[in-house]
Amino acid sequence: MTVWTDGYWWSNDGLRLHYRDYPGDDPARPPVICIPGLTRTARAWDGVAARLSPDWRVICVDLRGRGESAYAKDPMTYVPLTYVQDLEALLRELALNRFILFGTSLGGLLSMLLGAAERQRVAGLLINDVGPALNDAGVARIRSYVGRSTSWPTWVHAARDLREAHGASYPDWKLEDWLVFAKRVARLSNSGRIVYDYDLRIAEPFKLPLLAGLDMWSAFETLGDVPALVVRGEHSDILSAETLARMEAVHSELEALTVPRIGHAPTLDEPAVQEAIGRLLDRVAERQLA
Image 1 (cartoon, one colour):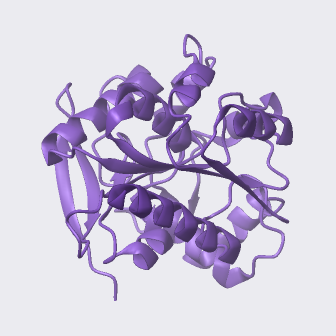
Image 2 (tube, helix red, strand yellow):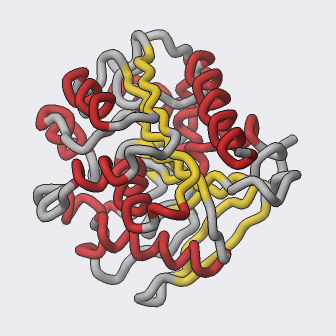
């Protein structure tokens, strides 16, 4: 059984934020910091963390308003620059001089922004199904469901409802896969109902242009010589094949992997992705020894 400890840190505006800390056997290796997507929690990284630890220390964060992290008093702080400030506070709290960033969707955008700000400290980068440019159709789809109040009487009901909502992204999943998914995105409430495990008010700033004022291409290009992996779902409506091709063109150390029969976003538990993550970490380790 994979063992982790719960850790906490404080944001600049006084929120108590949470992370899971999976120990690594080699303190000389940079830890892997895993940043989830818009509506996900640290639990989204259960499979990745179980496979990588204890060879690597893995730190899986709950962004503000998700999981065991406090909800913000002002919902307009649910924006990329505030999340990056929260993550920088975590780096200070843990005194991390070198680290690897893994990010899914929103977490991938934050990985680019944080990585560009802390360029000399980034040892490796995984970006899952997102890029410096976003497809409008995918953003509109996410806006259509984020922040809607929903509850279910049982986990099976939740799993079946999530299959109805997201089945196009994972056409080959069985009920047991949807149960795993449900337990990563939802929780048992005090009333005994299953509910989404995030502050529904994260939808408020998401109504505005997500990347307004942010030069994401410059942030990504700043990381152009960092060992990197970009994973894309074949049917992604967020990361286009054209954006991925441009990412490859401007990044000399990038491996790109497209996962067949998957939409937004791959879970990173897919066998081909597991192998690619192994290659990425091998490259990071080789650079450390060079």
